[in-house]
Structure formats: C-alpha cells, structure tokens
Amino acid sequence: MLPVFGIDIGVDSSSSIQGTLSRLAQKGTTLCISDLSPFEAFIKAYRIAEKLKDDKGKEEAKLGLLFVVRGDWLTKVDHKDHEIIEEAFNIRQKHNDPFDCFIFATARVQGIPLVTEDRIAREFLDDRLVMTWAGLNQEVWHRPLIMKICPDRMAES
Image (cartoon, rainbow, N blue to C red; front, side, top):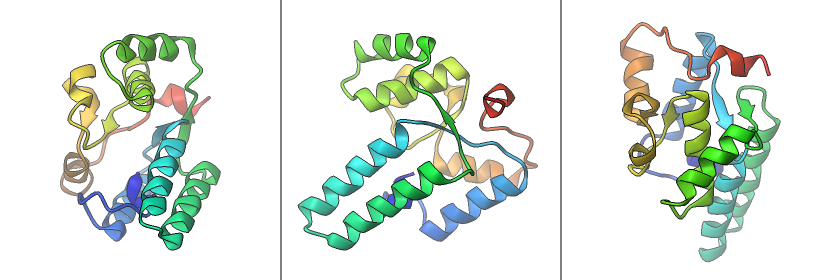
C-alpha cells in the first residue's frame, strides 16, 4: 500500500500496481484492509517526507490517506473485533510493532491472505495467509482468477 502514499518500496511501478488492483476489481475480487493500515502508511510516508523536508511527499501522504479511507474499492476490517484484539495481544508478546500485530491478527482471525513484503509475517501467519506482491501478480495475470482476497462474510459487514 505504501506506493499509494508516494513511497517506492521497490516491488513494482505505481502504474503496474494500479493495473493489478484494477484487474482484481474487474474480476469481482473483494479486497480487505485493516482499518489501521491506512493510518500506519500515512504515518510512515509523512515521517519520511518530514526527514527529507519534502513538502510534495507530505502532500502525497495526505492524498494517499484520503484515497484509501474514502474509497469504496476496499473493505475495511475493524481492528476493534474482540478476537482480533486478543490475537494482536498474543502477537505483541513476540513482536514490537503494534500496527503489524493488529494487521497480522486481522489476517489470522479472518483468514484473509496478507499481501506483504514483510518477511516477519510468516513467523505469525500460516504460509497460506502470506502472499508477496510477486505472488499476487502471478495469480492475477498468469492463472485463472478464482480467488477472493477477502472472505465473503467480510464483504457483507
């Protein structure tokens, strides 16, 4: 998600990311996101822009946040769910990033595959719940698309 906030993380171009997300949407795939993720991405993007004294980067961080939180292209998963809080607490005993704890807990509790380049995710999630951007692209562009990133029960809430 960081490229949406103006941060290049070296996994793909912004236009390629947009193309993949568009293809997923066209195929009827429901994409889920923890409601905390946009705020984590905004904080990271804004801090980087501050350090670089980059006013354009600050503006991109703000626009990225508005695009994600106001958009209807993602289903936001509430971090306040009791099971997610319990799981995040358990993960927090072994991991020092509170945002990661909630994001990993959301994926685990809801059974939602997490698309991430963070190698630490595999320490807390089954392999079936962790997918890299390259893996997602492989699914989207080179195989018949029969996946739902977000379970149907989440799309109804």
